[in-house]
Image 1 (tube, chains in turn red, purple, yellow, cyan):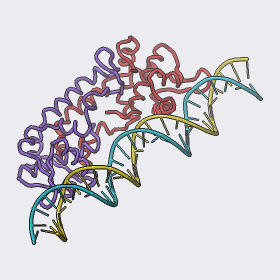
Image 2 (cartoon, helix red, strand yellow; image 1 turned 90 degrees about the horizontal axis):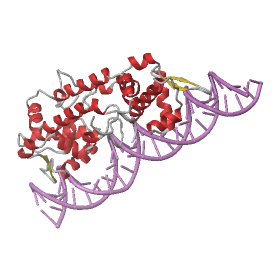
Image 3 (cartoon, rainbow over the protein chains, first blue to last red; image 1 turned 30 degrees about the vertical axis):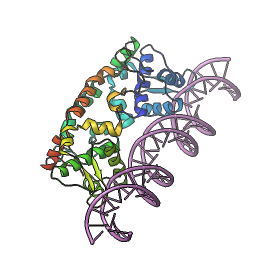
Image 4 (cartoon, rainbow over the protein chains, first blue to last red; image 1 turned 45 degrees about the vertical axis):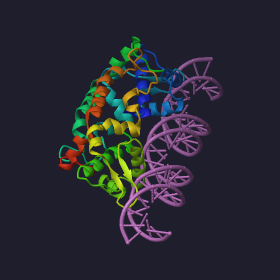
Amino acid sequence: MFSKACEYAIKATLHIAEQSLQNKRIILPEIAKAIDSPVAFTAKILQQLAKNKIVQSSKGPNGGFSISEQAIQTFKLKDIVLAIDGESIFTECGLGLKKCDENSPCPIHHKFKSIRAEIIDMLENTSLKELSKQLESGVTFLKI
Amino acid sequence: MFSKACEYAIKATLHIAEQSLQNKRIILPEIAKAIDSPVAFTAKILQQLAKNKIVQSSKGPNGGFSISEQAIQTFKLKDIVLAIDGESIFTECGLGLKKCDENSPCPIHHKFKSIRAEIIDMLENTSLKELSKQLESGVTFLKI
DNA sequence: ATAAATAAAGACCTATTTATCTTAAATAGA
DNA sequence: TCTATTTAAGATAAATAGGTCTTTATTTAT
């Protein structure tokens, strides 16, 4: 479904959001610990997220990562997936055909349509706020 | 969604089925041409499918691949996916957690549930017959 | 028997993804 | 200004997925 990088991106973003909701910055090694991810790889992914303005980073003592309340409310899962995996999940044919559409569909094109629509709907309508709130309240988890 | 190998597997199986419905065996290079896949890699995949009794192979002149009418009717997409990609698509957590279930869900577990159910339903209920018939009648396509 | 046509098997290669390491840059505080 | 702490950037390495090549086994027809 998602690349490993994208899985880490989602988990990292949600953990940062959870902390930011409590007005805490969080540094890289703590993020990696919280989401059980390799530190250096996570750093790369956070760079990507920062470039895409999904998280804010600041260097130096008392630095670390954070997300604005505004961003937590407006960004959706879709934004993270687009930033890390690109648009392939939204557009690519289920059987890998270069050209597959209503006029010239692959054998599973129509079967796939409603599934893809549901995936897109989910990604577009699930906000960081919703997910990080659930984490904060302990009903969902980021590791094990 | 599927590995490249699985995409080729589905396409190859459907093309063989289409031919078998017309009582034609088909040889490897023709399969590869029909589905626009690398010949040697396709050979590997067909070996897997043959081991899993999804296709029949026979060596020597007039050999090639075929699928019984019986198999075309009973096998579903699910059988191909299981044979090539294993059960990961049916079971793995959307965020890659080792343990993710109703009791200890990842942040997207519930969001993912209906999507996964729909995918499984599609794979379990889509027969080779249905898809190969559509190919035969020219309403779906295997390449470009 | 022999030759030709086919798939099977396994070793090998390549590209991509995942992950690490090293150095540089920025910032805060003493 | 100096040092410690943090992220940024880029080179490198390891693992996995994707793909090829060579040899062997099997079958059919002559």
